[in-house]
Length: 103
Image 1 (cartoon, rainbow, N blue to C red):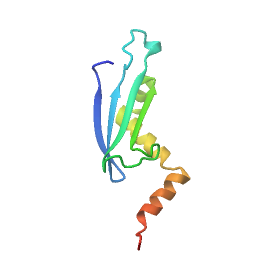
Image 2 (image 1 turned 90 degrees about the vertical axis):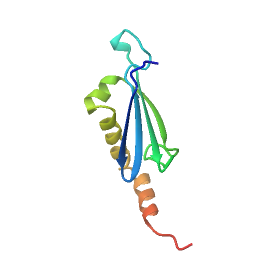
Image 3 (image 1 turned 90 degrees about the horizontal axis):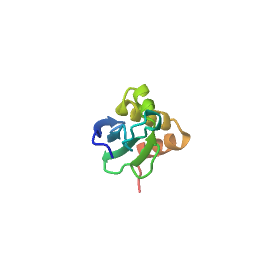
Image 4 (image 1 turned 30 degrees about the horizontal axis):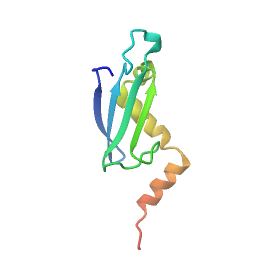
């Protein structure tokens, strides 16, 4: 793995998210074969579900150009979260979580 790993933290809908990003994960000399690695973790609350992972952790391999076109790893992760949060399943989970349980 390449030594240029970046780490970013941000708040998304009350969840602290950590994004770790390695733009040249395979450390290849051929730009056409570059593979980046993006890891998304919910860290507060620890392992809180996110719209694209029930475990609070997601590992994703992608071409680094896609990350750069999105504005960087944090912007990519935010856009991914926002897009995935539009799913009916996630919307229902958020609604249920907002309701107080009497039992």
